[in-house]
Length: 330
Image 1 (cartoon, helix red, strand yellow):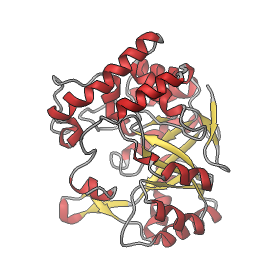
Image 2 (cartoon, helix red, strand yellow):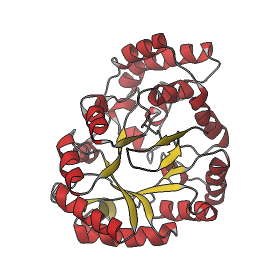
Image 3 (cartoon, one colour):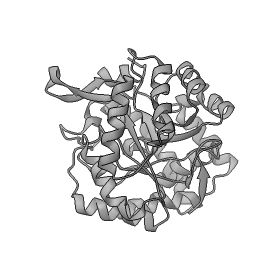
Image 4 (cartoon, helix red, strand yellow):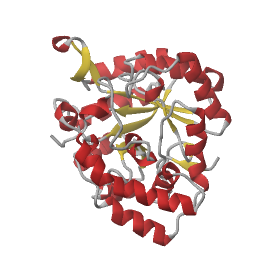
């Protein structure tokens, strides 16, 4: 497995990480805990050393499962988790309320340490910006946790560029986790240049467009009521019909290289910057092996040009409702 360094002074990890969100109920299915524990451990045996979770996944149970799965590998893997949400009593207790107050951040850290069963959180991300809490206060709270030895590295997810600069001035940011793929290229509009300037790494989540770039989603695909993709504008029939042109190109390039569309999409990301580490998720061993095979795919300059052109034609907003507001798009 190839290695990459997250940020100028961050940890060295496998070139491809593992997004663990789907290991607990999400995307409309309920995976078996014991099978997911074994899959995560299989990822380690295949060379993966970087795993991503969050308190809101599950909620809470994802951290517990990841902690259990990785208990035999303490000190040998890097685990990232996130803070920034809390249950909303006015909305049936659903985790839809932002909270990044310093006292809450520190309380979440203690709880995540227990669930993960670790002495220190390797990477602690603010999951979403909280408009009621200044960036400086958030960064200060994480700096206190780092000083106390409870957190090793500070990260942000989906922040604005101004927010990055303000937080970084208080506590150096090691890594950002933003959506980035052929499906969503907004980080190219200034954010990548800022990260390079500040020496911050990037961890793209949903690097396969929530499954779309694998070619598995067509006009015949039906999403269950508990699959949040059913509410996303990019998964309407009209959007799928237009965006299928990207998948068609991925299939063509993949066929020529004896690869798969997913491998081409991940290889495109890896080719962007040496400090980018995608975290595709899966609940199936064959897909895990397929994803990891992307590190061996070499794209030519012509391939990159073709993919860049096709990506311009992607249509549909990526979020709607409150989720869009959390990322500044609603």
